Image (cartoon, rainbow, N blue to C red; front, side, top):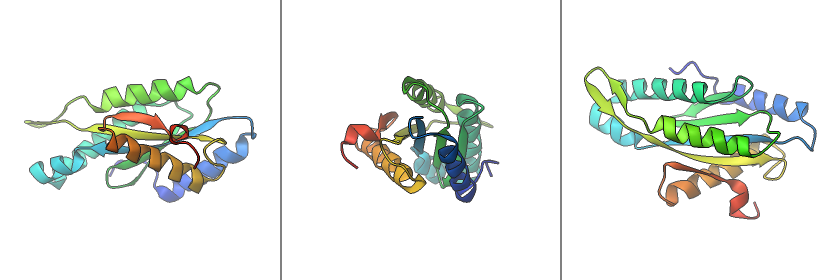
Length: 162
């Protein structure tokens, strides 16, 4: 639907990134979940929802660097790998930009809808050293953002010990 890699391709890419980085080189795993997508599907149908997912995927791809990877892992959930972070502020800037871009209205034919995003971010190696640990940490951070009001991002390290 979105022409993005699936979960299996994402796992391979995460392993590649992890193996190419030394223990002292940081990368990030971001879990991004759309806020309000279910309501769009319920009000306007799955066909329009599919168009929203396509637009969202395009906006995410245009908001990350060429070296980064985005995959759709199901429903309205995406995972982004920021493959190299010489400074953590890059994850801040990319996340802020994605939050802003994804909250812009989407017009499909005569219908205009709006969704937003909640993003959780886990950093390698401080938040985990395996793909599963990083995804789990980013997922917990994303749910914390949803609980705190949505349409924002946060780091797993802000949660304390994993």
